[in-house]
Amino acid sequence: MRRHIATGLRLFGTDSIITVEQSATLALDGLSQIIAGLNNAGTVNMTDGSGPSAALTVKGDYVGNGGIIVVNTLLSGDASPTDRLIIDGSNASGHTSLLVKTGNSLGGLTNKGVALVQTENGGTTSADAFQLDPNSDGYNSTGILNVGAYNYSLKRGGDGGEAQD
Image (cartoon, rainbow, N blue to C red):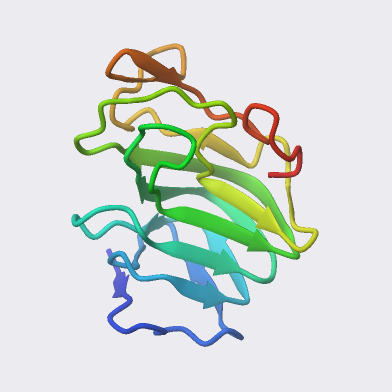
């Protein structure tokens, strides 16, 4: 298994198009990065164990080829801190599982939801580009995360959010 680790504030150039192969891991270790494109058949691990704060901004196309993105989020309400994938002015397509690590989250009421994938500047996502990974914390057989007294599901656009997110 190959493992690439982001060890600096900006390991990748903004013109980098990254391919994560099926047996490889791209470990961001909690650092935010901006790249030109991403083809993901492996694992993109955004977490570092200290709490959610990383943003991976993709300014070109994101293509999921059965890959996984690991995010850390503290589910407590709409403004919950979370790692997030940002699709900036381009498109996310294919199929990618979001493996959500909730740490010590107690859950909380949301109105719009917590944005794990966000679009900006005309970016879009295909309707089936992302789904919850069954290995996510609190995942149950109906595809919902149970955190404290609250249930969370992955919805494109969130509750009342932007349909393209």
